[in-house]
Length: 253
Image (tube, rainbow, N blue to C red; front, side, top):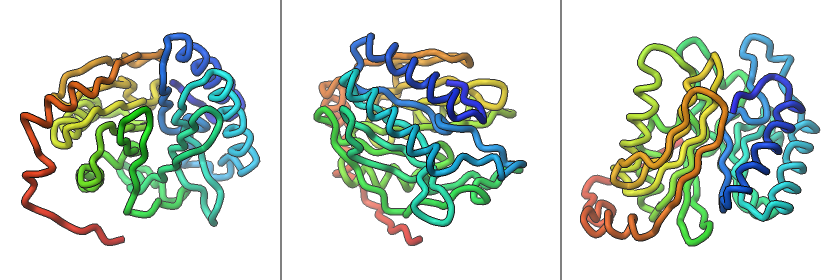
C-alpha cells in the first residue's frame, strides 16, 4: 500500500484492498505501518487527531465484520500525551489485541519519537485460527531480543507492519532480517510494507525454513500465502530451538 498524508483517502483505499483480499478467501489481512497516515517529520502540525483515528478504526471494524475476516490494521492510539504507533488486530469486528511499537525510528535523520510514544518492552502474544502470533512494527525487527521473547512464549507466526524507508542496501536489509527472524525462531513471518517513492515496498512471507512463499514488488498490490501447521511441526522436529536455547537474558525498560 502507498499511504499519503490524507487519512480519509487512505481509509478509502484500505477498505477497497480489504474487500479485494477477502474475495481471495483470506482468513487474515495484514496492512502496513502508516496505513492510516504517513507522518510528516518536518510538519508535526499535520498529525491526525484522535477523532480521525477513531473513525478509521470504526470503519475497519465494520469491514472486518461484513467480510468475515481478521484484520491487522495500523493506526495511532491517543490514550496518552503522544499517540502510539499501533498494530490493532480486529477479528470479525472486535478488537482482540493491540501491539504498540517499542523501538521508534530515531535513525538516519528521522525522529519518530518526536511524534510517537514508545510501547512497553514486554509484549504479549495472541492466538488466531490455531496459531500463536506476535507482532512487530518496522524498526522493531532490527532488535532480535523482541522475537526471542516471543519464542519463549511459543510464537508460530510473526506479523510485521513496516514503512521501511528506502536507501542504499535497505531492501537487502529488509529481506535478510525477515528471513533470519523466521529461521531463528522457527515461525512464519508475514510482513506488509509501504511502497512508493519513500519506501522499499516488497511485502513478503517466509516460512520457518526461510523459504519465500510470496513477495510483492515496489508497487501497490495484494500477495496471498497459505500457512500450514505441518511445516511448523516439521521444522521444529528437526530444529527444537526453543528447547535447546542455553543463553537467556532479560529486557529492562
